[in-house]
Amino acid sequence: MLFSTTTTVTDTTGNASAPVTTTCTIGESSFVLGQTEPTAANTGLNVLGLTEADIPAAKIVNGDLTVNDAWVTANGSSPTRWWVKGFLNFTANTPVKFYNSIFEGRTFTGTAPREAIIRARNGSAPVTATISFENCVLRVVQPDVGISTAAGERLGSFYRCDISGGSDLIDYWAPAVPDVLGCYLHDYSFWANDPKHVNDGSHPGWSHNDLIQNSGSAGADVRGNALWCYAAPDVGDVAVLEAGGFPGRDWGTSIMLTPSTSRITGFMAEENWVYGGQCPICLPLQSGGSFNNGNSWTVRNNRHGDLPHKYGSNSRQLIRWGNTMGPAAGSCSGNVFLSTPGVPAALRGTALPAAVLQGNNDASGQLMVRVLQT
Amino acid sequence: MAAPVVTSQTYSKSNYQPGELMTLTVNHTDLDRKILSTTTTVTDTTGATGSTGPTTCVIDGAASVVPVSTPAVTWTLVAATLNQSVFTAVAP
Image (tube, rainbow over all chains, first blue to last red; front, side, top):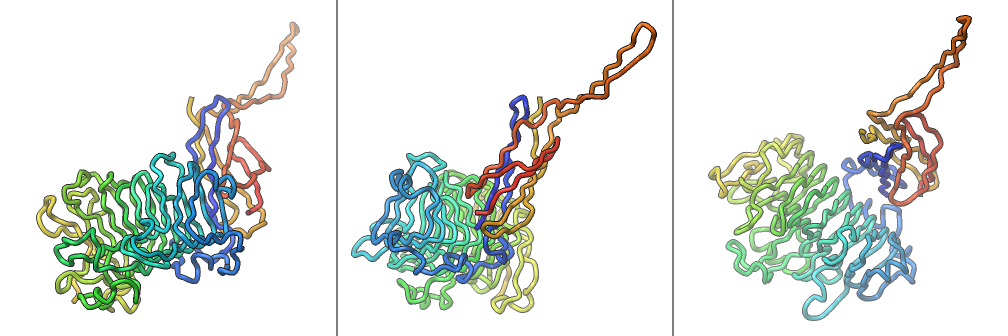
C-alpha cells in the first residue's frame, strides 16, 4: 500500500510553509514503484495475497452500483474488499478510494448500459470529488466497442491495479489528473465496427484502442506501469485485426494524448515497461483542434520490451508528437530497449535514439523517436 | 515576514509492516527565526557589577508542524528542536 504524508509548518506569526509530501509503502516490501515490473501476480488482489474468496458476501454487488453521498456515508471513503458485478457510476461529492476490490461490469443485451465499467462523470461535483483505486482488479466480463474500463473527468488515481478489457482502458480529461502508478494494463478489446471511426482512412471501422487516453490535463504521472498494448485474443473482432496486417495483435497506443478539451501540460510518462502497439506514446496534432500548441510532457526512463508495429516497411515509431504541439526534442530522455527477445539483438540494452523531425518544420511535421527495422 | 520552509521530510524506513512503529522526521527553517539571547548587567554606585546568565527566547519559531497522512494515522510529536520535529505513528 502506498502511504503518503503531507506536512505544513506554521510559524508564530501565522505564516505557513508550502506543503511537502513524501511517501513510503506499507505491507509488501519487495515492490518498488518504478523498479519492480507490475504483472498479474503482483497487482490487484495479489498485492495482499487475497482471492475472490476473501470478499465477504455482504460486499458482493450483483448489479450496477451508484457511489453517491449516501453510499459513502454508509460505507466510508476508503472501502475495501468489494466486488461489483455491474457498472459503477460515481456521483459523490467527496473523494473515495477503493482498496482490494474487483469491478467487472455485467452481461447485457443490446447497447452497452454505460460507456465504462467505472464511470466518473459528475461534472457538477467538486474537482476534489474523485474516485481512486488501489490493489484493485478492473476488468470487463462482456467487452463491447462502446465500453472503456474506466472513464471520466472525476477519475482519481490508480495504484497497483490490474486493468483490462475495455476498448480503451483509462479515458480521462480535465479536470481529472489521475496518476497511474505501478499498474498492469493489458488485453484491450478490438472491434472492427467502431461507429466513431467509420471513415478512418487506413482501417475504416477499426477501433482506435488506447491503454490510457488523456484528452486534457494539468499534470498527471504515468509511472512504473507495465503497458501491454495487445488486443485480447479471442475477444471481439480480433480475427479481423490478425488478418488485416496485425497477426501479433500489436495495434493501438499505450499512452495517447489528445488535447481536445484542454491542453495537456506537465504530463509525465516515466519508468514504464512498454510492449506492443503502433507508436506506444503519442501526442498527435488534433485536426481542427484548439490546443495544438503549448502542451508539455516528460517521457523519460521508460523501458521498451519490444518494437512497435511498423509503419510502412520499417519505421518503428516509439514516441511521436506533432511538431507544433509543444514538447521539445529533449523532452524524451533516458528511454531504453530492454534485453528481451522482442528487441533485435543489436538494440538490446541500448538507449532509444533522439527525436528527429519528419516532414516539414511546420504543423504538418512530426517529431519522433524511431528506429528503422524491417 | 518570511514563511517557514520544510527543507526535508523522511521516514525512518521505506517500507513498514502493518502495526509497525513509523518515525517521521521533519526538518524546517524560517529566515526570520532567531534565538534572542539577553544578558543583563547591573553596576552599583561602588562600581561593582553583577550580571545574569543569558536568557533566550525564540523569534518566529515554529508554532505548529502538522503532518497529515493518507490513509489517516495519528502522528505523535516525540521530539522537537528549533529546526526539527520528530513524530511517530503506527503503520495502518
